[in-house]
Amino acid sequence: MRSVIEVRHLTHVYMPDSPFEARALDDVSLTVNEGEFVGLIGHTGSGKSTLVSHLNALEKSEPGTVFVRGIDLGAKETKLSDVRREVGLVFQYPEYQLFEETVERDIAFGPANLKLDEEEIRRRVRAAMELVGLDESLREASPFNLSGGQKRRVAIAGVLAMNPSILILDEPAAGLDPAGRRGMLELIRGIHESGVTVVMVSHSMDDVGKYCDRLYVLSHGKIALSGAPAEVFVHGEELRGMGLDVPECAKLAAALRARGFDVPGGAYSRADVAAAILKRFGKGGDAE
Ligand SMILES: Nc1ncnc2c1ncn2[C@@H]1O[C@H](COP(=O)(O)OP(=O)(O)O)[C@@H](O)[C@H]1O
Ligand SMILES: [Mg+2]
Image (cartoon, rainbow, N blue to C red; front, top):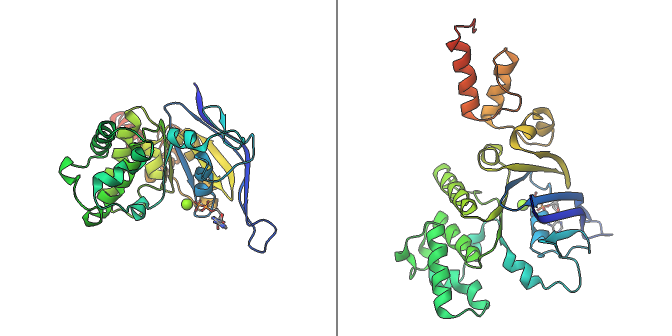
């Protein structure tokens, strides 16, 4: 597996040597591999947004701490515009940053700055709209007349129109209703399946369990746990201690396991739970 992001012993202190000093990141190391869908979870204030803002050089890092495709983001000679072309960052509530008069112009803003020709810009806008599920008829609409979920899609399309190979989203489902959340997560799954490496910040264990290949759990600026979802969810007590929770199905799986059902450790999917229950009753066992 080839790594596309490497973070090595990254520490970030806001307002050092002041009464407001905050150690937002404390010796964080992590790796994201080509093609992965990585989840970054943690309680509010654990350092998630600070961490992702280092990954596209929005926050300047010390030399030797953050690498994107082997490029040291802290090195003097590194051109940050090259990095930002590679790594698309979708902020939390990105819809607040829409400002153009039409959907098309908003999405075209980034590509236009790259000085691409008109035809290429139009092509990218069309492709990005399609990828985020916005109907072409909305091209001339004002973004301000769209629903909250659609506005967010416009903002994401604007980042995708830069053709990033790595997409980072900071709490992309925050503030949406359940149907909107599901739609947004399915959309991100589709982007991932189109070949983009994805890093998603979330505080929903259910969401990261369902969509991510691998997780990093941040607590007080440190990586507290990492691994495949099943490896992380076995640490129910520790997660609760960090103000997090395991997915509902993981709780049910643990309860069944404690009662002697044959459920694999760390199971968290409905399928695992259903299989264990069927197995028990299918055998005609002495279920309580
Ligand atoms: N611009 C800032 N100035 C000072 N402190 C900040 C700033 N941004 C974040 N912090 C502090 O850094 C810590 C981590 O914040 P953040 O990265 O936003 O966490 P999260 O995204 O997990 O909620 C918190 O203690 C927060 O108060
Ligand atoms: Mg945040």
